[in-house]
Amino acid sequence: MVPDFEGAMTSPYPIAAIAGILIMVLSLAALLIWVERRLLALWQDRYGPNRVGPFGLLQVVADMIKIFAKEDWLPPFADKAVFIIAPAIIMVTVLLSFAVVPFSPGIIVVDLNIALLFFLGMSSLGVYSIVLAGWASDSKYSLLGGLRAAAQMISYEVFMSLSLMGVVLLAGSFRLSAIVEAQKRLWFIVPQFLGFVLFLIAGVAEARRSPFDLPEAEAELVAGFHSEYSGMKFGMFFVGEYLGVILISSMITVLFFGGWLGPWLPPIVWFLIKMFAFICFFILLRASLPRLRFDQLMSWGWKVMLPLALLNLIVTGAVVVAWR
Amino acid sequence: MWSLIKTIWNVFLHSFHKRVTIQYPEEKPYMAPRSRARIILSRDPDGGERCVACYLCAIACPVDCIALQATEDKDERRYPEFFRINFSRCIFCGYCEEACPTYAIQLTPDFEMAEYNRQNLVYEKEDLLIDGPGKYPGYNYWRVAGARIAGKDKGEAENEAPPVDLRGLMP
Image 1: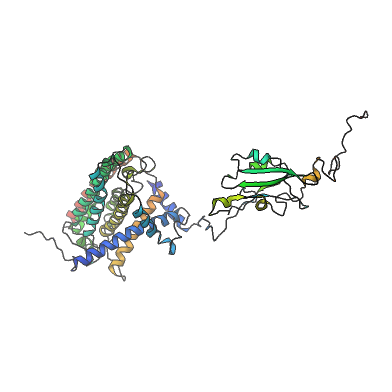
Image 2: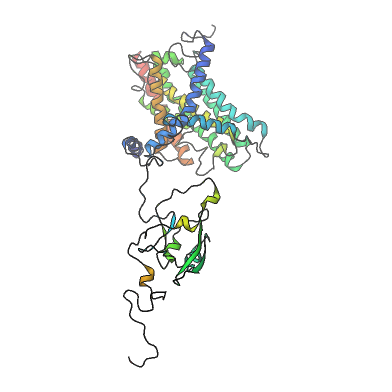
């Protein structure tokens, strides 16, 4: 049997879908710099950037002009080829993951039947960017950041995928549009609450956001894996991080909050509302929680999260089997 | 775990708090009356210069930003011929104000003295002198000091006893 690569949901105009999603996601990632600074300021009783343009919105443009005009410095001691390719990897892997995200019916690049596995694989590949950047920089801080990234990913990747298997069992498919359709009567947050909490924590770790921003850890490691980066290469890591936040937020929306499903408003609006709520939650986490210690992170992942994810999988499996 | 959730919730509640930032150029901050910024030279209530050019401020200044030259007028009162403060050096420590024996040099709450040209930060005496007595309204150094000037001999100042005749035999 020929594997069904093109599902029912795939956009009839793939080029338009690719261009549209690419532009939307990239401009959203740039905008997130402003959103994050304003929200952090709000929660710290400040204003944040509010001078450049209306509400400071043009701050993003100013930042972009600045970062493009910066000197793009290649350290003489760095492993040049790897150093250059590392920031590209994170952008490529995250942007590829967006190919399978069903924003709404018709607004999806390709409706793979293994979309969830594709997403997990791509987010795992993303760690190569961090590890290689840390290695190629040939500096202590970068290397430590890269090491931490590797250890963190190994600890968190495992229960991240396991926490999603409950959703797959309930929906009976790896296809993301099918998972959304399966939530027509009840969002998976209700039957899979434990899975949601586990995926949320793993997602924060996956996006390397505070309190799991150990590879960066500006308090101890200068800037961790990207200490030696400058100019637009640093900008790529930055945009990659924000793209990761958007990606994890969209995945939470798709897997647990019914994706585009919702009354009255158009589907894409519902999707964006839910996604934006989770982006704000990510920023709220950064505003409130201190960074974990390295050993805490590892033992938390292996000793607490992994058994819980397994338990969740077993119980969900048993319930699904008993139901049928 | 519970404390983590409580922390997140408490931080979220800050969305509804008042912001503490003062939107500076549109909204002026409250400056305490004794805050230390632009330096001025004050005059006594009669309108004369208070500064007696004793150089104590210039000596006290840790960054040597005060330059002056003492001279005497026709009433034998000392005053500065020129008095120059280089505000590109000044650190607004207020030591000059503390050192001043006549309350002449004072720091004011006005801090808006930015310039495009560095040379414009050098203030001469006419830039520094103000018309009023500053923080000490009633004080007139020459009227209370024991020093002799034209028109006021020793012992004629306010609350000053006549000078003791050192060669006299009476107790």
